[in-house]
Amino acid sequence: MAKPEEPEEVRDRRGQLTRRTLAVLPVTIGAMASGQAEAQEGLAVENASLADVQLALADGKTTAGSLARAYIARIEGYDRAGPGLASVRQINPDALSIAAGLDAVKPSARLPLAGVPILVKDNIATGDKQHTTAGSLALEGAHAKDDATVIKQLRAAGAVILGKANLTEFANIIAIDMPSGYSSLGGQVKNPYSTTLLDDRGIPVVLPGGSSSGSAVAVAAGLCAAAIGTETSGSLLSPATQNGVVTVKPTVGLISRAGILPISHSQDTAGPLTRTVRDAAILLNVLAARDPLDPATEPLQRPDDYTRDLDKDGLKGARIGVPSDPADPLNDVYFGRLPAPSKAVMTKALEVLQDCGAILVRASMPTAGWIGGPGTTMGVLNRNPLSRGKGSAAMPPIVFLYELKRDLNLYLRDWAVGTDMKTMADIIAFNQANADKALRFGQDLFLAAEATRGDLSELEYRSARAMDLLSAKERGLDAYMSQHALDAVVFPANVGAAIAAKAGYPSVLVPAGFINRVGDKETPNFPLGLTFAGQAWSEARLLRLAYAYEQASNARRMPAGLPAL
Image (tube, rainbow, N blue to C red):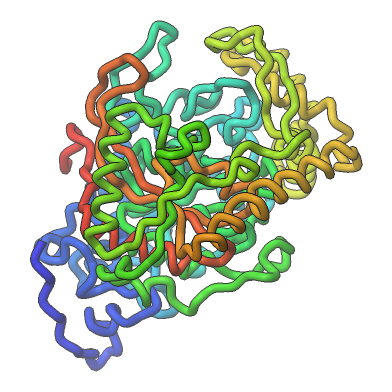
């Protein structure tokens, strides 16, 4: 794509911001926005970046109301009808009236997201007419007493909360082997790159990834300008790689978790899902802030503007760790075990990094880092009737199950209203009483969590958390990056999610290419991403590296069959 012409520097007599002024705002749009010429001719919402949307609003090429109507039309045409993506669980009944009230407001330094329609995952509380359900039939009528902090930040920046995105139920902590994107309330989210191919159990062969499935699918399918998801371990990275979108899984504490249905306060975070790296940086500018409701945000470190250092030459001289040493094949757990199609995409991605001037350091991750500390998992019998591993013992993390009971009970006490569900035990009982609708895949993980004390007093919990940090953080990423003097580490897709998540460290995923096989089944082409991971508060550096890779690789392609309406 040709470099866009530099816009003129003009501020009209009414003080409206022109494109040059917008270009140097903290959100940095304008000349750098992708598809600028297209946006000036009439915004093509199905593939417009968030920066494109801001520019079109600022230029008066569209209005908040028009955008909201356009995205809702696409939701009706492709999510409810057509391929039936099922990515949007609920449209905000007030979205159109809120958008109409912003028709005369243009994006500015004070309101960088003015009029921009954004979907949020349905485990993020909204104190409005929308329900907050985590995809659970047990919480079908539940509301929240207030907006989660991230929702308050989005609204304060002028965003239109378009609706709630479907998700893997309870962020994939209710049942062993629950398919990503399935919830008892919202049904099965479909990957827009493969909407019809099912296995013998009626489960999609190409899954949408999870648990932030609907958020990622909606962005990929052009149903919103951007979306917000959450992650405990892989729940942003997994759907981002499966749907060819960008995400930032932030350092734990960069974005407040107050008002988000939890799994584990040690690892939970929210994060953006967008079409471009710049868009993700724009949203981080809005969301990264201290919050007295979340003590994890107290040590927060961030730049004034995450877009400031985005540079197509940002990879030059960067030392990038590639945890793959052919001389140590038994320890090559991230790249060495990739199937052939994924390996081909990663080989090309590494070539692009080198061509962009990065210094690749090939060395396996220390075994003590990736293999996990002793006493960090616990056996849970898999009774999922549709699981290939039914009857075997799954080994979920101890930290997740022990923190889940305590943290979920606190959310139900402090945030949930309009529901009879006051504890995890209430949800379990509801599910058992409505098993035909609520328990297609069981609730073995909930049952295991309920068996804990719920106050985190157990020695095994405290030991497990300490060992997670010792292995993943101190003996893993910290040791690896220090030994090799690295700026970042790259992983294929989301396979490195756990080591960064246990450490509380950030990751940025960017589309890298396409593959056409799941196991032994040939499939339509669907995306595969490349993850950049680093140490705490290194989001700005990771975004710079990811942006340079994105500009050089140009790997994202919109799914076929979802044209403009």
